[in-house]
Length: 200
Image (tube, rainbow, N blue to C red):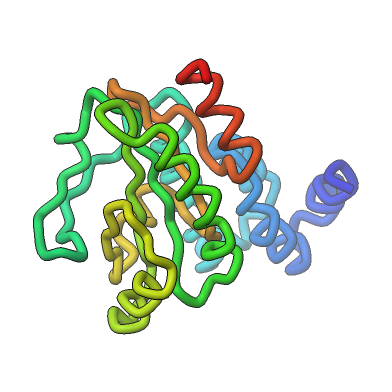
């Protein structure tokens, strides 16, 4: 299917269907894959809003590849304190992008809670980043879920853009050196990765 989709884009580069197909596929591509795929489209789409957005997204993806420094940010936490990511160097950081209206995000909470309980401390910290526009619904969800880890609000989507987040839940694991270790791991895959890191 993947090969057939790319062959369609190559065969019909000026088709609006090729543009829409690539836009749909972009969420599952690396930055370089997306940049290469955009060049397959006819030049008639160069100034199309979808192509402009995909180019920007490809650049965002390249800035968040595994092994690169994690984009730094400063934001106000749910308790009113100021949080800066770079101040947390020296421990593994798990960023969990979610929202109150996202059922899969909230279904992931019990797994994250188990991992936070098992590994949390000086070497590991979980940070929830909510994409909720409605802060009251965000805070209500926190009460309902009983999250014990730090929660931040990304109401304007700035942090999500820095980390090229198109869909949620989206989890990013950052090393003590401040570099991205992995992206998109969930449930057993995430547990296995942390077990590999911490040796238990």
